[in-house]
Length: 182
Image (tube, rainbow, N blue to C red; front, top):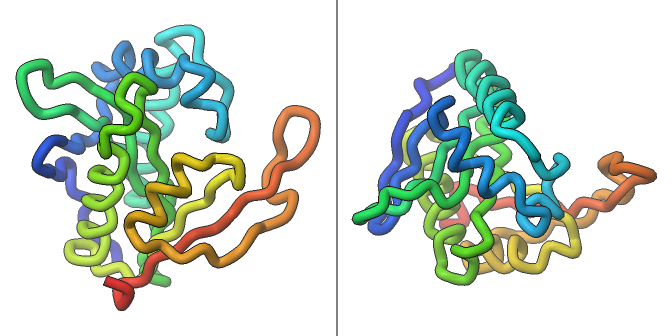
């Protein structure tokens, strides 16, 4: 039983708005930084057309009600896009979703990722009525692990050589939070 995906989620400092093609130039600033994409399952983008292609792909998944990606907008004077987050995959039959997130480097260390992920998790449990949220993280991604630990996610283990990268494979740590963990 699928539920309609919310196009906007708001927090005190952020607005998570369904990603749109008009966001491409702003998201290129985030996705072109090798430090931001270092642990993502993609190479740093070089051109706005690449960001548009990514947004188109994510929009298609959203239309199928299988995923949704939000642009993270800093509320206030600038209304600047500082990153993205969302449900990379939603499985309504098993009441679970996988989340992902990225924040522009200039905004690191200010609690924005924690605030955005917290909003995603709360929305998943209350609005989508999901039971489980998962996050797959490169074991070397210390900052991402800190975000999940602050939000009381549980490290379930490491999936050895789980993903193919350039010339080999990499391990992935899997974290989860259940609706009963609140």
